[in-house]
Length: 287
Image (cartoon, rainbow, N blue to C red; front, side, top):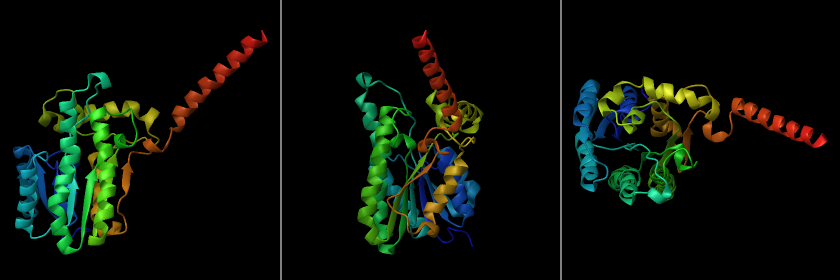
């Protein structure tokens, strides 16, 4: 029996990247899944691949009516709702504070925070009636560490993490767990899309993203592995399953150790430069 046998999940942003791999893994674990996303062709292709265990629901999470319909169609088809994965998102945009476009900020909040809240608004009554449920809000290490992501994205992800805590405190008595999943750099199409590459092409060709991430790993991440959608999907599977039944209000960080501190290789180089600078300064003072 799979870890999600008999369970039903809704996954937003489910037509590509992390969301698509999560949908595949959930079905492999015995779940039935509603894949929600904006790109119909991609979503329907994935749902067809997964067979009777999956449906596609075209959804823009920034529209409350779309989110309401998404939850409604999932429960109408599968009869219950055990897990909501709020994964839909957009990439970072780097603008200086003085140059911020507040409409872009509102749009980021609309997807990453308002969309998450809307999903919970319509999922919670169903889960509460069942006295059980798991909500997984996909955020980012940019929500707790400043400087790596743009202001729009980072602030929105920070809000998502705290929204998770607030929801967890309210919903625990109803048997509903709410956790955040915060990835580090993951090789998905979102990097290519941010540079203007066609969305479908970016999703199909991840070599550039993997190569770009690998160049910064020695300085940022202790573990020498490029993160992939599979790594985040496996963490989502754990949070969706009964194996995590005592976890709520938690931010599960999957970043290869990036947020824990400085990698040994980076500190060796930095300390060597520091010591050399000290020795040079002392030598000048002696002469």
